[in-house]
Every structure is written in structure tokens, then in C-alpha cells.
Amino acid sequence: MQNVCFGLREKGMPLAEQQAMAGQFIAKVGLRGFEHHFPKQLSGGMQQRTALARALANDPRILLMDEPFGALDHQTRELMQELLLGIWEEERKTVLFVTHDIDEAIFMANRVVVMSARPGRIKCDLPVPLEHPRHYGVKTTPAFTELKARLTEEIRVEVQRAASIATHG
Image: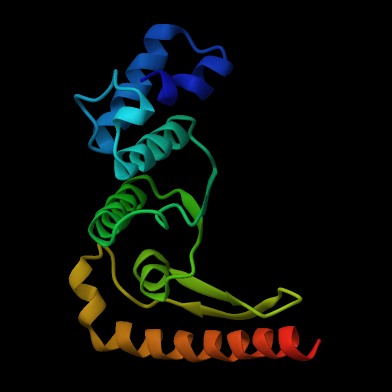
């Protein structure tokens, strides 16, 4: 609770309003019953849920997420993807989500931007034509597979270019 209230407290929001707002987002991320646990008492996925609740409670215009699920095990990562996608479908916040995982990028995004090797520039910006709400089963559809193949090739070329720069200067 205190972690989620941090930004609200810094804004000078009255305690009762902080707790009400924080409680709403704690419930939204599935952490009801853990309000008074310390971070060290929470799993990695629960810590990520807390960070998401803290960010959302402050009503940001843009949510910046840099590899937020990278340290999580596969199952927890997929649950967090579905949770965030569900929250996005409700809240419609702009989310800039950085990931090196192609499946995650396609599943989470309305568009995927691939960066070039040094210097980092936008190489391609592809729309993701998958309907919302999204279910994890979309990962087995032909549209998903086609987009994954295209992105895999775009990234492969950049990885080869970066490796060539590293070895040949």
C-alpha cells in the first residue's frame, strides 16, 4: 500500500484518498490481500504488479516500460502480459513497451518498431492487425506467425550488421 501510495503522497493527496486510489489499483492488478507485505515478501511477478499499480495510480499520460517482464519465468511473464493488456484495454493509456521478445512485442502492441544497429534508428514501424480484446491463443494464428517471421528477419539483419561492426570495426 505504501509503495503504491508513494507518488500520490508526494503530490500532497490526503491519506484517505491515497489509500482509496491505491486500493483500487492494487485490486486491479490482483494483489488484494497483500497490501501490507514488504517487497521482499513478494514474488517477482507480484513486485511487477506493484510497480504497475503504483504507476497507474498516478494517472500518467504515457506509461514507459523497459523490459518489465524480462526477469520473470515464462508462465508469470505470460500472465503479466495478459494482465497489462487487459488493463490497457480498460484504461487506454499510451504504453511505450521496450522488449527484445518478438512474441511479446506482437502480443502486446498495436504497432512494433524495430531499431537498427548502431546508430540506433527506426528501421521499420509495423502495425499489428490483431483484434482486441486479445487472448493468448492469438499467438497460434497465421497473422501472428506471418508478423513474427517478418520481424524475425528484420531483427536478424540488424544482429548480423551489429556483429559485423563489432568484428570489423
